[in-house]
Image 1 (cartoon, rainbow, N blue to C red):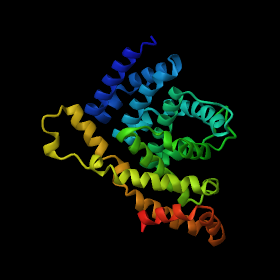
Image 2: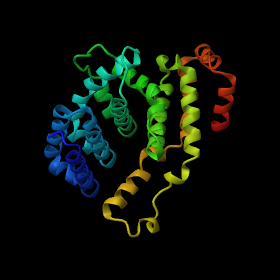
Image 3: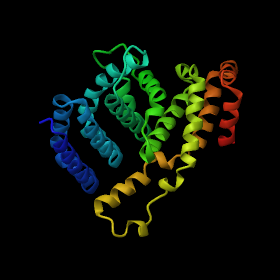
Length: 278
């Protein structure tokens, strides 16, 4: 039934089992979990999809390869949905409700996690044509989605984590010399600067969980905190990743293209960027 409270309870139970049982739970009960997710995505309203996406991201965060393998079919079925939602928004031909916006940000967050944790699995998902958008460059749509929704990534500490995850993914696209990204130079540099400033203001919340901190916490709460603080997004230094991406991009695209990229960004913004990476 389309009962928000029931979905919330089911999601909480599923998340608890994933946190405590890990890959053993996923392997043993993967089919049950997949059936539940399938029901939510196909039978319930968009608002309920947020709960399902949290379950998928938690499973992949806890067990990157096992999670992707077990949930492969579910993830593949989500791709055409994401594309059909993203393209009209990127083309500015469709307005989006706040509820749909929140869910779309979670889709992007999920795919960003897959790209950062398991690049080979990301390539499998995003290089394979997906009907009915077989001619669409999935990689490009995803990248433009990160740019478009960076500022919508959420509020509070979870929003800051998502913003850093988005920025780290954009670093990878930049390092490849992606021309579509280079054409969005000012937007990209704004994102890098904002993300670095946000990260520097929240370092306390990203510090590893100590043994003393975990005393008195339930096993589920301890595992959730450990998982959050050991997340790959916190293991990578954003400023260093941005610096390396800029250097790699300059090598890939050549001097002329690189000079055009630099000159298209406001000098004041470039100075702010350099303050963080030098």
